[in-house]
Image (cartoon, rainbow, N blue to C red; front, top):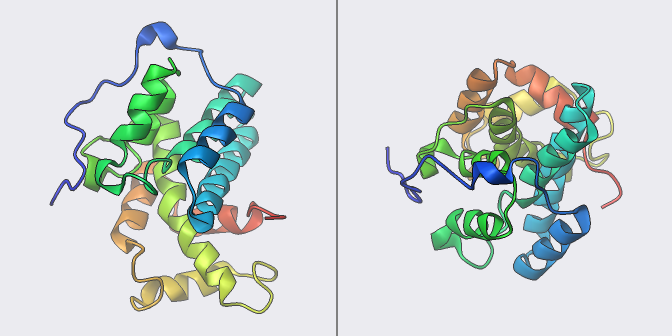
Length: 200
């Protein structure tokens, strides 16, 4: 296994910053400043939306829901301009802004095969689970005349078996994320379909 963007550390941020977050407006401004690729920006908003929806479904308090949203929204913020430094740049930026270390850790662990950081918390695991899978399901929606409308889990699974479709999406990562989260791939797919980002 090649750690293409190995972070070479396991501690992120400062415990003194637990509970500290940036506002949604600040996060969206950061995204706008750093990400010029519209497709990537949509992906980040989509993952943020899914993270928020999942946290709400779990009944978490507003502060926790916001943390989950920020982790999803900003997880790929440095990919557009600094792909060779992904995800070191966004980690440094959030550490500088004194953001809760749990958010930073989730971002650092959203690609264990690449960054060498193990997803441990529920937020870590769900960000990893939604990242690749949401992009795959969205790619499938773009080839369907009705988009997400009427989409079925079995249709997505069929495409997952077709290695030529959305070939850049790692099936291994999707399977690994499902196993780590303890949630079957079928349930994750259904959640993504039901909670897709609308109006973009």
